[in-house]
Image (cartoon, rainbow, N blue to C red; front, top):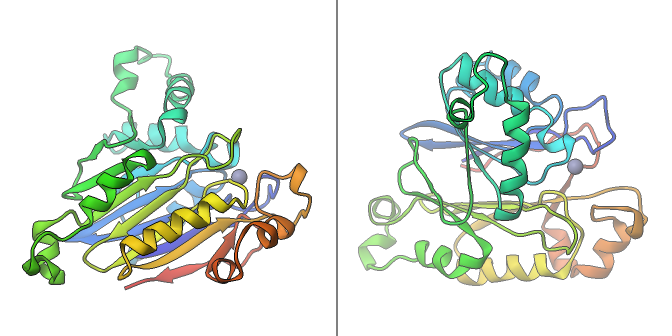
Length: 285
Ligand SMILES: [Zn+2]
């Protein structure tokens, strides 16, 4: 599992690629998950395709995870869908939570509309928005998506029922290799969700918060995941703003973080959405 941070721009860093991540899954062949698709992301992906290492991103996109509907997170999503539909002949799968699903569907039906092929039926083939326990087909076999309400099912899916299955090679055979959990907006009033992705064979996980606040529920959630799966090495990405005014911020800021999180938890967070140019590129394998 390989993670590229495509951009670290905050909502008002207009000169930068907006905060987004690309995760590469190696499961026979390469497949990609895109976390958010705001400004500058498509240009960045096109640039990456020039490299032999990452040459088929648009073609091999398993799904796009949408954290919420702010422009810096979905500003280029329609173009991505239209490009994949008209140029590559592919439907784009989108994953989000059920609160966002309906609004996003309406938004995309408008922004992906075309003069000549404007019927609902046609547009329906361009994208498919999934939530909860939707099954992600494509080439990622046994991939399952869960909502936070299905935490039990999520944890069950990651448990190994037989001693043989403890062997990394066997896990792939007996159990679901990749599991994705869409978390709710932990902060009331913020319609956003984060993503937890786990690779059982490599025992690795990535959590990306989306735009949220520093709130104790997130630490509790991660504690719960760690308790259930002590073997999984987790990388945590949390949004952050240097504007240290908790009441005028949709992000974690210094005061929030120091008040709401334990020192231990703070120490293992990678803060993003900060507008800093330095990007986090991680090869977890
Ligand atoms: Zn944002």
